[in-house]
Length: 440
Image 1 (tube, helix red, strand yellow):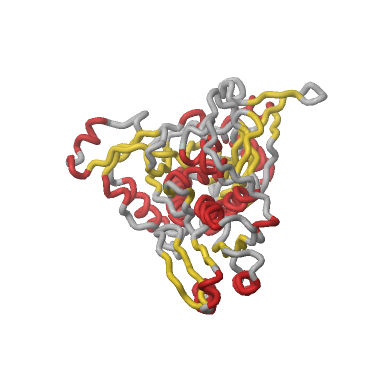
Image 2: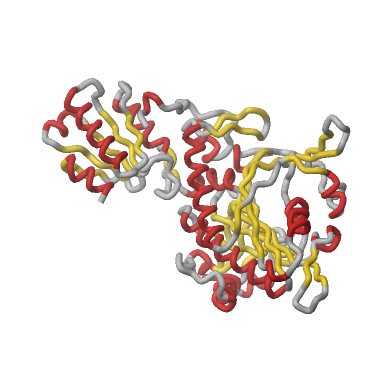
């Protein structure tokens, strides 16, 4: 993509409404634009990052055996009345009526709808276990939306829902998602700590939040310091192994951990003082097991191997992609801008033409741009006639992991400079070596 043809409305000044680093940088880098309170458009640069986050989430859900579908954002109030949550959910739910005066709602979550889909299609235990997921925009009328897309009213959510014949089966499904979440956040360049959590309006009796450490986080974290050092499950983890996944779950939950809302002072104080971790963090995922909370009132049952009907045991598993993007920025930035992990960066490399219009610089940049693009790299080519300082500031602000800088003097010697955005290290190398650096 040539920068001269890309839509990226960069702001030179810090927006006054931005309270935290991620909100400020997302606005300055032209990633998002506020449309109304707590509602944002995702502009091209932000959309590229969001898509890469979603792709990683999708890959790990699929690896764990979940199956993707798509459910509507508008839901019938009747389903929520069946489960008993319609009146109990609160003002966060946006309630509306259609032209036939039928009560509808803009879905804040999908437990009722997925249960309806399940009960209409699955009748036998032979079709279990089953885990269905989708990635969808949702709406919760937050009383105080803030921090940009970190706490917005309209947001994107990956929500998965598992169905099992027994509690034991449901716990295995829970452990699958627990493991998949550890892998997902690691691939996003984050270390997420799983914390025992309250089930809230979702309900149930087993729940974990996944929290990344950040000074601007709204959650307090109390745990053993070893939580930040545990090994992440490998790519070829056997998700069908009950014992294997249970051992992963047990390892991560053997050390005491809790959030400020429900932490046990005595248990935390029992940890040796030098091994305690007390910090702030951002919730980026939440998983629940809630048994038959929805299947019983909504009649979601299957015929078991004993010939009798059984209400299925369910769990739900959420990750917020539109919250993850600012969370990544909170965890990875400096005074010059964003530092994207390579896995979610909007571009793999930016080629900076230091003297657009100069025949040698133009030719070198075109050569590098074509070679890297042909090799499948996502390349941003700064072909603008901006000053050098502006070009560098833009590249640093948007956080592309690597910069290839082509100036007249270096190009005359058949060389370019390669900068690592994260470390700031610069290396002069031949044009061929620079190309090979990214395609080999």
